[in-house]
Image 1: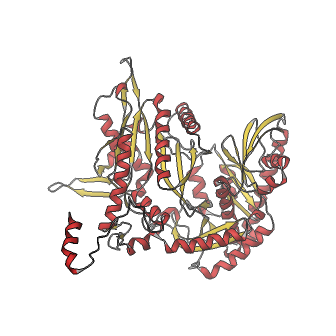
Image 2 (image 1 turned 135 degrees about the vertical axis):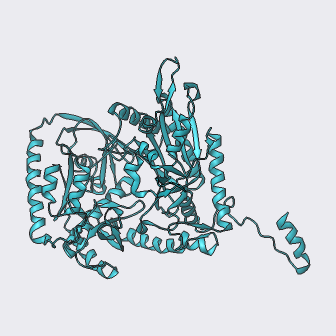
Image 3 (image 1 turned 180 degrees about the vertical axis):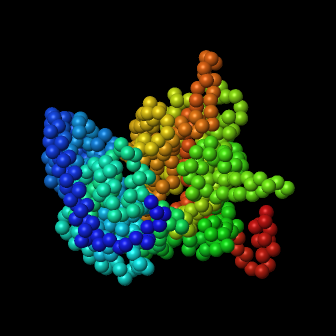
Length: 614
């Protein structure tokens, strides 16, 4: 396959491609519906939770849907139901249930409902872009990490989208919404997917890169749009009553500046116009309190084109930065962590041992140089995380069971080669510091240690005035390690979350390749969403680095479990969030200007200076 798709002939989507996709979709859908009808439809028990409602209903396997259960409870619930969760797995409202299960139903007032609503709105945006501009849609429709959604697409010629194009896109989106088009789901094999998207080389690359020969994936249809997608989706497009394009920007395929140039359109949508108006008003307010503006006005920090993607902290900004670091260091010390310092540069052999050279090399800064007097070229990588260095520390000594858990925290600078189009103030930078912490423990200690981290998350976020949500991300399609370890790890995280007592949702298939994780998303005072904390289990690095300890009977050697965690995430990102959360007025303990000494006359100025410097 060519590395550049921009030289191909333009394909008339509406005349040939879209009807063919729809035909293939309908053929596969008919086969799967026939197969579904042949399965046993015996009775199942459904334990439902929807707000204050808790009931047990009966249904039929492979027939009853969450929407039918919602209708049985009340028409009001059914009218507001956007998505469901079956045994903690997000599920389409019109997808048949497969057995006895717990069922939760979510509306737009929930995180699950909003995310699904915006995900489905991205499909509506994709439909409009295909219809109006005959473009090739690229990545799966993406919700943003904060609010709304976007879609990347390839346009033939030199077209560049801007605000003048938005009315046409919005009009087309509004038409689709009024038609109440259902979101329909099918499973396809790799060959079927390749056939269905044969004219779109971007989709073919996604399929070939992510799908093994014997694997299946899901495809959704909404009106004329047929697209690769994990789902789930809202029942139909009529739920989207208000739709707005926010901005357009350039992007590159897979974030690679040497690949095709794409256009990215950002949007926002709501179930009614009032919420859209309130959101647009909050956007204008957010512009006033933008951390980039506050940072300059208060002489906290600035950026410079001679160091793109980095921040230069002025004295007052440095004070705030250090206070944040001191707060977290103190709390980590209370929890039994030891602060350590690790190198910034390692050989590429080191990164190959951990396999991060394989998975993350594109985002690493690399150095190739010769030692004076030598012709040998040495290859090095600048660290973008600390876990591998901590693994070396663990392996440095012979370890025993009675030393565990070993807790290490590293606050040194990290470096990530972010794409230029992704850089944004302090929220996306190339140099950053974070509370990069790791626990080396036995399998029996995992649940207790994870619960301790969750308690720390609750303490820290409550102090900053944040609310937050919890997601358990489970085994992805491509993973390392054996299934037994994965199942045990996921069970430990589930039990820790249940003991913690907060609401959580399972994010199936979104774990890291080396282990499951808990993602914590925070909401600030303006109800904006940010990804900060994470807790990840890892049985890959202990295997790669041989992180072993002698068991209690001293006759066996066991492999440790590694728990990655970061509560504040990057200091830079938290600094930006707090500046906007407090509208530029940081709390007293964080403020760089806690007191001002004012002399009432010229005669008292010398004494005022003594007070300042005392």
